[in-house]
Amino acid sequence: MTLPPAPLLPRPPALRVAVVGPCASGKSTLTAALRAAGYEARQPAQEHSYVPDMWRRLVDPDVLIYLDISYEALLERRPHFGERAYLEREKARLAHARAHADLVVDTSALAAEAVAAQVMSLLEAK
Image (cartoon, rainbow, N blue to C red; front, top):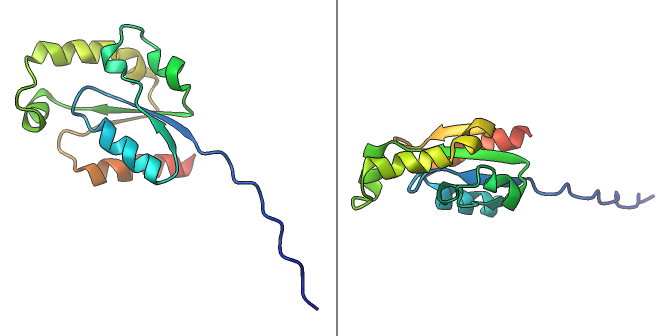
């Protein structure tokens, strides 16, 4: 006797992930990796907004990831970035997001793969 196939269970919806951080911290790279892994990932450009919770208004994420970077590492990635004060202004605009982040990763000395691995570990536990 042959058993009927097991019913397909509905797949849970993909986690909505917002990735925020200063310029050159790796947001685009991480977002692309998360999308490739099946997550609904977006970067709401919070570093350019004076609306403290723009990340929440645009994405309303299940998980908020904050990527940080030092000024020295930023200059290695973008030699013509500008003054340290500009980075500090971005970080000030990101303070609300950082305070509410589920994970903060300093990407200054990390390869993109290491950042993705840290984030994926958190997401898989959700």
